[in-house]
Image (cartoon, rainbow, N blue to C red):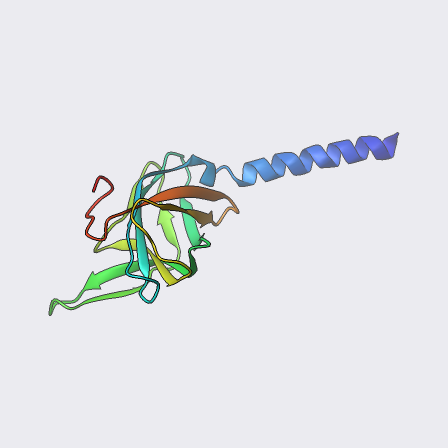
Length: 153
């Protein structure tokens, strides 16, 4: 009886600890997700969205997962004083409480390297955002035309 009671208490404690560990990423809302169609698979694709933290703790995006690309990463586009633009991995992205981080053309964006299939207009794909608290947020991303400039195009 004591062993059964211990198992129930241990299981309840583990359950409570697990739910508390995901409190940060549970407060994340993703809006206005979209991507442009690609030209085949030889060039990387990109996805854009707004990631809003509705909670009272900072959340940190640590990575991306999708079956569409072997190497999805958050990249940052920057332009130097000569007007030359370049992209580089952004690393982890922190989102303060009640703040929104925009992944948009010309700034932070989800870079989809080593595409496994073409990104075709009218289709969609799943992208999972990974967080430092172990949580995940899955987003279905519609693919717009190759000339799209926003989620409505």
